[in-house]
Image (tube, rainbow, N blue to C red; front, side, top):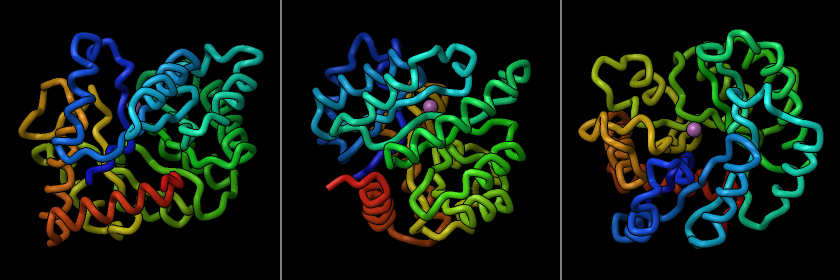
Length: 255
Ligand code: NI
């Protein structure tokens, strides 16, 4: 079944129909969803969703947009949350120089600290990277991690960057942008990266794939990402779904 490795169901855009929508996942062939934390409140909300729905899991962490809001004691809280049986990752963590140019140094510090936190609790992490590839690669290199370390969420960089990420042991997650018209870069990345290193995601409620572009995204639409990858790699969609599911189950240690 489809495994959506990155979604935000605590977002207010799901307030009206969250339960109805999530209850329809199984019939839409969505077998697993990881809900992502952006601060302490959304990390706790992710755990609540994971407790309510057997097919949901949680990631806990500070999004780079929130880097300046990390307070004393927040990492202790994150460590405590990470012990929950349904927390499978630290995230989303990383860098965003598109929005956060004024807090670059704080972002780098908080990114480094959360990588160390992930190591200390032995969980993989999910990385957000926007207009910050050089620093992102530098920090990941410094961190000197093993094979099962992190996943680049909604990868939108070049094939060359993908190669460097793979060399560092990172996995690549593909979102709806691969279906967007004229997205040559991500098409090249999908053709280049071995299927064993790929996962699929929606980043719901954002970035709905074609033909749902502009709508509120949901994990149901992740099938469009699997179909596009199948087309680009000359594989069956069912095969792409099965392999990306297996990749995510192993990476996030889900039975
Ligand atoms: Ni996200």
